[in-house]
Image 1 (spheres, protein in one colour):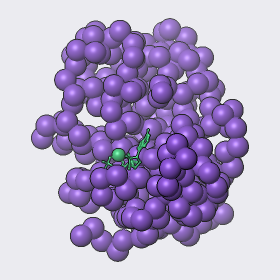
Image 2 (tube, protein in one colour; image 1 turned 135 degrees about the vertical axis):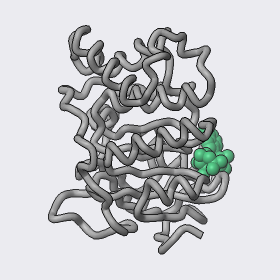
Image 3 (cartoon, helix red, strand yellow; image 1 turned 90 degrees about the vertical axis):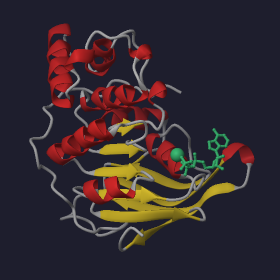
Image 4 (cartoon, helix red, strand yellow; image 1 turned 135 degrees about the horizontal axis):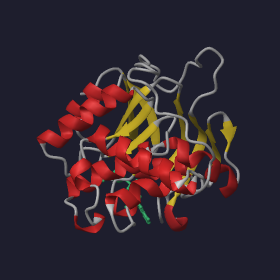
Length: 255
Ligand SMILES: Nc1ncnc2c1ncn2[C@@H]1O[C@H](COP(=O)(O)OP(=O)(O)OP(=O)(O)O)[C@@H](O)[C@H]1O
Ligand SMILES: [Mg+2]
């Protein structure tokens, strides 16, 4: 399945550094000043291909301003959970709500996907244009930007990520780490309201990891980050959740 969202309208600027700020510990609760949660899973159950449930009666909230880490063992269902949030799969029971709206149909998900800022575990699922510039321009063009506007977004994003030298490279030929940063660029080009990152430090060397840390600090966007890299999570998140036995529970601190 391709990760690129469909039309959603408009391209407001990226938030200035720090906006949205650290959210403090809000493990799965605590509405913020009456604003609906960015993401809410209520009593969600899901199993693959009629098999036993991977997620069962799962409850999760990510609030406006929250920077949430989600940890769990291999096969616990973290990527499955994110796929449900993105509407790539549908729950057997329970509801998924995004930006305060229950997601019923593919049309509902199409409207919110561009704003969810989802970076796949495997960058190859997200990159499919001939060049890096084409890949980053794809989303804005799809949202109705003119070629000149899309070009300006490409330059801004490549500069921001320190990837200007990759602009005309063939995406397919990039290294794993380069692909991951370009995948983040394709998502930032859509001006997301939050970021959903699945194993963002996979394939990144120390320099690229440090760059990603700096970018996330600068963006200050609310986030849900899945990772086994606890050091990275401590630096980028302020609340911690664990997925185990098909359910999410809050963690006071990372072990
Ligand atoms: N497309 C699929 N078809 C069938 N089973 C799947 C599919 N994707 C995942 N699974 C199964 O669902 C369970 C949860 O997988 P998932 O990829 O969500 O785990 P994860 O927590 O993301 O693990 P990891 O830390 O290794 O990325 C696993 O048992 C996995 O084998
Ligand atoms: Mg996974």
